[in-house]
Each structure stands twice: as C-alpha cells, then as structure tokens.
Amino acid sequence: MFSGAVIKLRDARTAMGRLSALVTPPVVSNVRIISGAPGLQGDPVGTGNPVAFAEVFSSCVAQIRSVGDAVLKDNEANKLPGFDSWRELKKTECKNDDLLRFINDRRNDDLHAGYSPLTFTMHPFSFSSSSIRAVPSPTAALLIDGTGPYWLVDQGTPRERQVPCETLEGIVFTVAIANPPATHQGSVFAATDPLTLLCLGEEYQANLLFEARSRFVP
Image 1 (cartoon, rainbow, N blue to C red):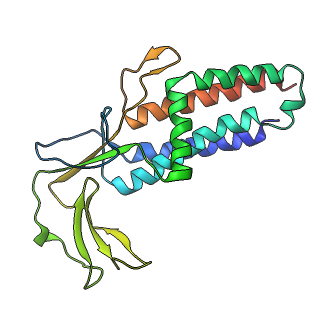
Image 2 (image 1 turned 30 degrees about the horizontal axis):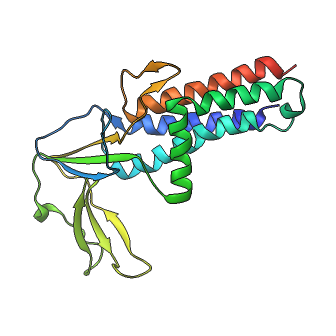
Image 3 (image 1 turned 45 degrees about the vertical axis):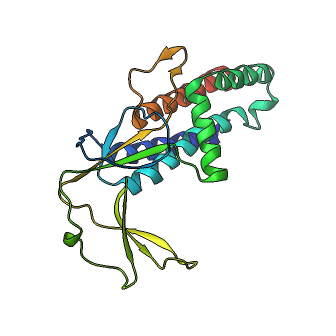
C-alpha cells in the first residue's frame, strides 16, 4: 500500500537535490535586467544556470504535488474503513493552506498553460557583446533577458529556439518567486525564496505519507 507515493517522494527528493545543487548565495548589482513572472518578488537565491533552474523547479513542483495525489488516491487505501474521512480532511487542509495551494496551482499552470512563477534577474557588473563567440548560425540574433544572453536561432520558423550563451565573467543571476505564498500551517514564512518554499512543501508531503502509512498499513 502507498507504494506509488513512496516512489513519487523519492522522485521529489531527487529533484530537490538537483535544485539545491543549482542554488548559490544571491549577489546583486545596481544594474538589473529582469524577465519572468510579474508581481511582488519573494526572497531571491543565486544561480549559475537560470535555464536549468527553471526546468528543475518545474520538476520539483510536479513531483511534490504528485506525492499527495498518490497518497490520497491509493486504490487499496480507499477501500479501507476510515480512509474516506481522513482523505477529505487532508484535502480540505491542502485547499486552505497558502503554500500547498500555491504548489497545486503552479503545477496546474505549468502543465496546462506553460506558466512559471519565477522571475529571473541578470546582474551585469560588466558585459560586452564583443566577448561572445561561437555564433550557432549566421542568421542567429543575440538577445538578452533576465536569464542572460542567448542566441535566437531559426527565427520565424517551426525550428525557432533559444541557445544560451556561455555565462560570461562579470554576470551573476538571481531568481525569485513572484507573489509567493505568505503562510504554511498557520505560520508566516521567515524566507520566501524558491528553495525554502519547496523544501517545506516536500516536508509536508513526506509527513502526509508517513501519517497515512502509520494509520492504515497493517
């Protein structure tokens, strides 16, 4: 029983490990090039690879959300006496919690609309386009946003894609969540950076699985 949830929790922890490896202390400059979700930014973290950070953040949100699904929708557990009422209690708890609702909504936004809550900021202490080499195509256009400089290749065709440039000296990046959740289980967050919030979400789902197994596994 709950074997699917155990697998999803393992996957969530693997994704969280990948995200942690991409996080560095935030460093900022007075010059800021920002892209991503609009709104009030939460606390930032630094990262050396904004593109990878966005992909792994998306994976973390999906995997964390899937743990709860796997617990509450377990076929064997749903046949047990008392599980229905416990499941409905937990579903109500999740709906009324800022953080858990945020994770649920962002997973749905990502899956159905491709929306990300992340805001990236490039802080160029120094930058010169002349230092960029290895143009991937003669027609590639050099563009810059909060995730750094990148080449736009095959513009206006079905093959249009972004090719990130190598991170240059003098450039650092921060990433934050736009309009982050404010509370979790009745407590106001001490920090609202992406890693802290997802760690708390993963912790909740791990405790949910532990409680389910303690109550319903013979």
